[in-house]
Length: 185
Image (cartoon, rainbow, N blue to C red; front, side, top):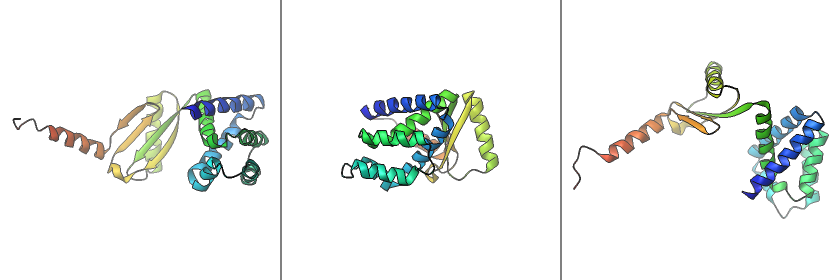
């Protein structure tokens, strides 16, 4: 819980800096890229959490990885976070920044899970339905999970619709486990 508060505060400060410097979109792109690296690379996540690797080495690695493509303000922020020994919450800060950025833009975040990859036409239909449901613009993240067998699971902020075959089968299993037709002794 403490790291969430820390991340939220640093993200808010970064967003204020981005507004001041008119770099909101650019820094959002940097944070999105940073999150993508964090998701893809286990070694990167371990580096950020490691107490063994010295601050100077972490700064050097972050500069090598991101200096060419990130904004100068973003790089200064990453160096500040590392100097303050907060690099272990860097990915949480990036996530919080993106959440605050979407809130500022009025964009809601949605997650769509299907058993197979959706075609472009199906994605367009799902996104249109989500925009109508949310009554605003929507940022959609798609995942494929064969365990749901078929159907779709939609999550928009704190609401969820589970139209998967796996959920229907689990409901039937629960209903049959009650066995209302056999008298209980």
